Length: 255
Image (cartoon, rainbow, N blue to C red; front, side, top):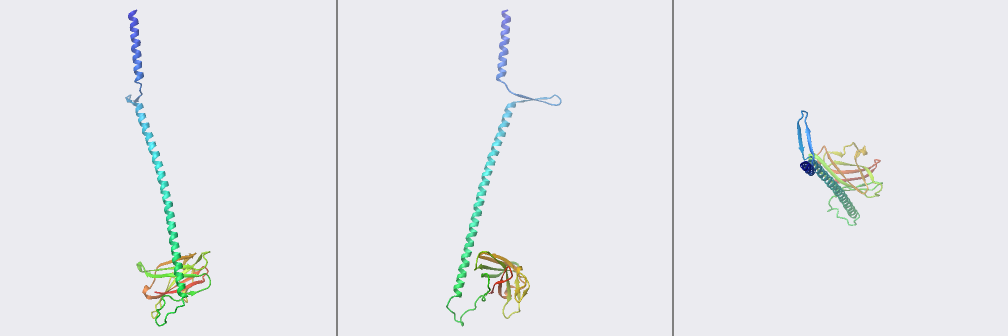
């Protein structure tokens, strides 16, 4: 009896120790079974799951940080773009104010020169570079800074500034032409920009001219070809018409 009790006690003790050992060494094992009965054992399943989960979380965190940084960068670039647009607008306003002041100064100087009581000696006076402008009733327009030069490819570059000397509201709208005439003593030669039929030196269709709209001033530019060379002409006449075809200004410039 004593031997039987001792044997039973040893078996119970050994089984308890065996059970405790597996409790301490508890882990998951994945078995992969093929179609033909092959068995593959994948140990450390929980460890691999934890590693994969950690990598996914780290990737998600990196993606979140990257999106946040991208949004901040876009917001910063948008603010810079707005600041740049404001700076460009301020620069444009300053240039406009500068041109207005320049135009007013030139207009004031021309008025002072016109109203000056001093008279030059006719024998020594030099010829005026421009003819006396034709003044017509209606809106007041002044022409300043006329220039005509040879451009690339045989083109003629014409530039002048229209100044509204009357009311600035509403804006003054109309059309303008430049008529080139040959020098005195040379062959009669007349060309007009833009090209249009002339009758008595005036365009028949005034609405085919270069359109403009001015509140204070506007710079008009032509860059077109003439049949003859610029040196063949002695003068250029700027014609300014209103929307209804009425002549607002006619002024001739020596070339």
